[in-house]
Length: 381
Image (spheres, rainbow, N blue to C red):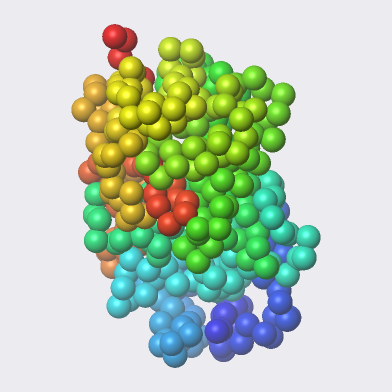
């Protein structure tokens, strides 16, 4: 594997930067400086003023020419679109991001997820700019493009907000998953001043090779332990079959949590909560759910449960309004991602597809998937 410095015209083997050195370990906590360097480097590609041709070598031996038509700007944060990261895509498969430009060099996506710091092990809170990049790569590049069915053209992915509370799961020197939460008192986007009334377990992802090891359940347990002082905790509505299995397994093993874990819609008022443990009991007894409106799908039988699930749409008017808002946001993201006529076709590789249906962040565990679509308010009965 090779990286190429923006200040050099020759190829440089990654080992030349020091053994076991990775971006998350050396990147300064200065997003503005990173963006300035990135924009300067891209300008040299666009204007064709570099002294010689540079290439990025893949593990297969294939070489990708570094030019404006093979790169794409990706928006890092949903709520701060001015912060971007430059991605290199495979011309033979423009949906695949193979490297990102960090610290004035190109790094393979897998190397961006690695660390040489032995202290990074287990679940660790995202704090630094480098860790935010790792979260972005896991969410948008790894899950959004590499570890799901790309034939499903109806789903696209939005990055997390800049201040999203998140933890990354580190194992053996690599980031293998994450989960995010909505803090009590944080804005939920359901109107001016609307804030979450309880902490909410929002999104979670585990890489394919680490599934079926109980990591989803472990992250749910960590969430509950993190907010030990809160009487009620939420899991984002709707809970799909795979996540329901995680909740069931967790609650069977931890009876002390049965009374405080709820399926919630924002902002989480009592009329927007449903007992997860009650759903478990109803499923076990095979009785009908007395509150069918509390979930968009019958978690006992309906809905696809593979990691390649596409989005399921809501027919509610609230869903239509949310879709309109996100379409405007995603259209702007498309404009940011395109870097010239040739790069326009590469926008989809950066998690910015044409806005056709509502964006949903899909949650994986134990080889299954569940979707977290939260911005609908249940109509009163």
